[in-house]
Length: 325
Image (cartoon, rainbow, N blue to C red):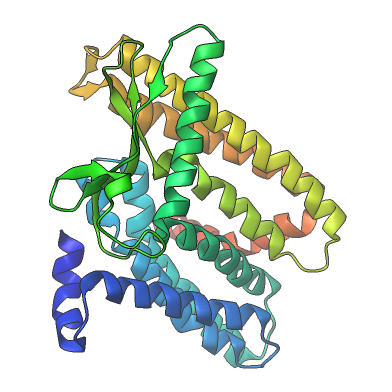
């Protein structure tokens, strides 16, 4: 992978592996952002700035993987992680030098810290990651069963290794409580079985859990300052169960469409890729946007922080449009 080509010379010089170096980037970045959020020091902007770059680099290195699996939304998001993090780091340093306090930046530090930390911890602990995968898979097929669409069942939990091989999770070759080596595209997964016990041709993986979407809202709400926990609790109730329920419908819908219309093809895009990488992603973004609007009405402080963070981008587009002949 391209990320290995970027990391390998540096990892070799430091006497460590590519994945361990990625891990160090994430840990250092999160620690610096956590200090920048919780500290009352006047230098907290300078502390957070390198943290943004380290964490942005960590997520940027996922870009080749998403190119490999042809996921356009995640390609865009991961590729933009590094340049955006550098821009935020520059903003942090500039704000500190001017001696001004920017509440939106402080909130964003905390939001990122409290969202990324639990997510990465779960993804690095195989037992926890597999538990999330199992719950996600069970709920998807349960919905298909009670709706009368399909009588499916879960296969045994499995692991897809980096060399392309796979095996039972019960025979996992790594540490089940902390595993940092690269896995294959499937990672930890559970195959879906038909009524007869044969393969349904589709599996549930960690990314199907919508944990990424839910944890973003967790970080955003936990990091809010000057807002009562009663209001934040109400916001949690509005967002997390809704995301979880919509994701269950999403997974069930993808399974049904793939099994029913597997031969369907449109411009060399099969039904699974269309439903998963395009239709479901678009629907998820619309749902996230709708819930954000509800939260903005409930929590005006959150709305003002988001608008302030978007100001530099809006100014850039304004300047570009006025510069056109």
